[in-house]
Image (cartoon, rainbow, N blue to C red; front, side):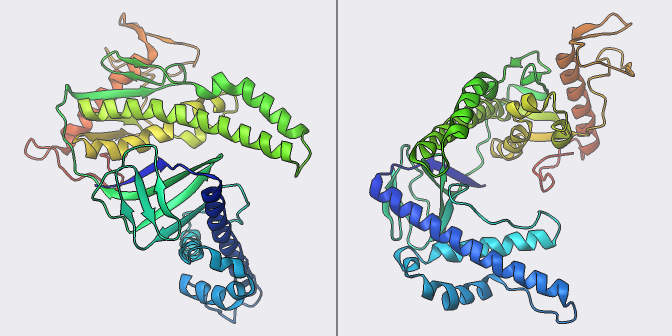
Length: 384
C-alpha cells in the first residue's frame, strides 16, 4: 500500500528562516496565480463570447517566470520547486472547483497552513532526510531506510516544522481474536464494542477549554502587530496543536486495535456534518473525532488484512432491541439504558453495538460468493 508518513524535523534559527522563505515564496506564487485566475474568470463572465482559455499549471508557471519572478529577486534565494508546486496545487484546486468537489480557492495568509513541496535528489537515512537546497534535515524518529520518495512536503504547525512523503508499505495480516465486531460511537464514551469493551475518549478540548479561553483573551488584548501579540498567538497555536495530537493519539490506538484484532469491523455511516449543526453537542462531537475515526479505519483495515463494513445511516441501531428486534418510535438522548417489554435492560451504546454487529453479519451474508467474502472493496476501502 502507498501510505503517507509525517514526522517532525529539528530546526535551528537559520534553518527556520530558510523554511519560512520557501513557504513565503510558495504562498506568494499561489496568491499571484489565484489573482490572475480570478481575473480570467471575471472576464469570461463579463464577455462569455470571448471564450478565453483558462490557464493551466504550465501557463501559470510561464507567466510567473516572465512577469513576477523577474521583478522579485528573492524568488532565486529558494528552490524553484516551491513556486512550481504551488501553481500545480492551484491548478488542481481549480479542477476540483469546476468539477463541483470543492469551493473556489482562497488567498493564503502568512502563518496559516504554511507549506511547500520539493522534488529532485532525495535521500533518506535512519534519522535524517536530505533534500535539495535545504540539505540534511534531522528528524526526531527513525525513518524507513531504502525508500526513495519522488517529492516531500514541508509544513508548519504552530511553531514546529514537519516533513511528509509517501512510502510503499506491504500488507501485514495479523492474527484475529474475533471474526466480527460492531462499534458504536458516542459522546459519553468514544466507542462501545459489541463484545462489551468500552473505550473512553481523551476529551482533550473539554479539559483544555478554560486554558484556551484564557489564551484567547490574552491574544485579543494585545496590540495587533506587536511582539507580545505574536508570542501569545504562538502559545495559543501550540495549545491547539497539543489538543489535536492527544485526540489523534487516542484514535490511532483504538483504530489499530480494531483493525489488528478483528477480521471484520462494522461501523455506522454517521452524518457528522449534520450532527455538528446541533450547537449543543457540536463541541463534544468535534472533540471525539468521528470523521477521523472512520478515515483511519479505511486505510488500516486493508493494511492489517481485515475488512470494514459501513452500515447505512438510516438503520435504527439505537432504537432497535437487540433481543427481540422491537423498534422504538422515540428514544431520547437522555435515556442511557435501553429497556424493552421483552425484559431486556441494557446500556444503549452496547445495545446499538450489538445491532451493528448483527447488521454487519447480514451484509456479509449478502456479499458471500460460494462462501467466500470478496477481497476487493469499493473505492473507499470498505464494504457498504
